[in-house]
Length: 372
Ligand SMILES: Nc1ncnc2c1ncn2[C@@H]1O[C@H](COP(=O)(O)OP(=O)(O)OP(=O)(O)O)[C@@H](O)[C@H]1O
Image (tube, rainbow, N blue to C red; front, side, top):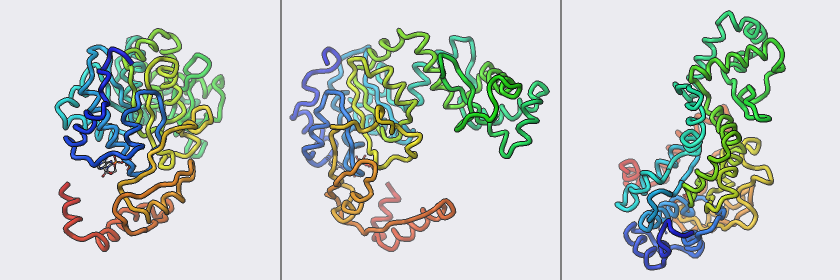
């Protein structure tokens, strides 16, 4: 990559100085490799192997060496918690703070899609966005369903168990160049050309004109916007010559396809980091189709955990079901405890963990943990 940051951004002496500044221990070989890598790659990182630490370190080094005033680094994560953790890390360093401003972008995938594609698309139609929120949509949709225009749909749904969920979860899906209206998780039991199908579509369109959307709608709107305005793709990929994707294991197929559409055939360097064995969604929703899989074959690995020792690492290795990984424990050897729960007992997990921690962890350590 030329012209956007200094070529010695990841030089050994700079990394060592940053490690000292951040009071980090020396990196292991795999951590060095990822830190200094400047090409597109996937990184399969075991729990506690330092992915968050490395992303923070890498961003601090990039911020220090960044020269472009129009192109930036794009850092995307799945949750606001992960995004805030990254933003807090870069904000704690004077050089890093520049990454929180234009031309850089640190945010969730959802906010990236909103900012660059979906909101411009909606505004271009003269619509003022009032809410992108599933709960707000549900309230507005169920209220609108009471209008006489939707009597056929309402009568149909009232005869069905949980029928109104079709309306409260009515979602745009980009299909065949158009926005189709589907249920949140499954297709409605009536076709789009039936009287109920036409009323559902009309209700959804009415709410769209009022500026009330579900989160998922934004992806379909973005897909249509890019299909109708393909020139946006090179403009956005040129704006971000370096993309870091965190929590990659939780990326849905739709999110994955959109990011691929924007960056995959551009010169942008895309580094995807995550732990497929810590994925929180079932395979049906996650990026698990062969062509979309994370990590791709040949991905680099961070197999050494600094959070726990060999005993827990051995057990955790047995749980790496999606992609077998031999985890090495370089942290403190804790006590192994496995909590098994189902839906009915899930509510007891936190209090059980607290009881066990209180019995095992010395009180002064627990107090320090609370203060932090
Ligand atoms: N080079 C290093 N020097 C000192 N501590 C490190 C280093 N690398 C990682 N750690 C420590 O190891 C622990 C785990 O690191 P981190 O939270 O970055 O891992 P992670 O892979 O993001 O974890 P998770 O799987 O929970 O998301 C932290 O306490 C972190 O400070």
